[in-house]
Picture (cartoon, rainbow, N blue to C red):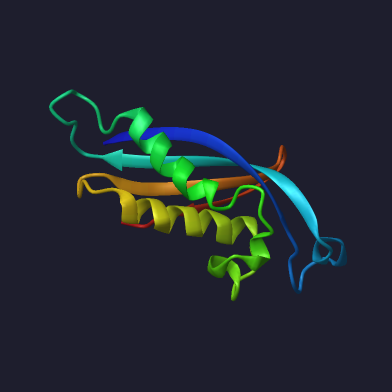
Length: 124
């Protein structure tokens, strides 16, 4: 099994409901996003997917979140824009954009600070 990881970031504001009072106030983070994809096979060029291609796809997804109030986006209207839900959203959106059935998103980690993150792992 081959696994690739790409890392990107975006900045956005959010407020969380029904958590610690401090987090219920509007605040922002510079999220670091780690995306892992895997494949059992390499393509004819001897790679899973070009890093530039996967970075482009991730950038298109995170670009929709960058410099926004996450609570105001349709994707988070009914869900807290927590690190957990951000990771889930990015994983689902990315998997939908990958056209090669051999390539699967295995995990997305959303770091909201240097010492706090949430990971969504897709179970095969």
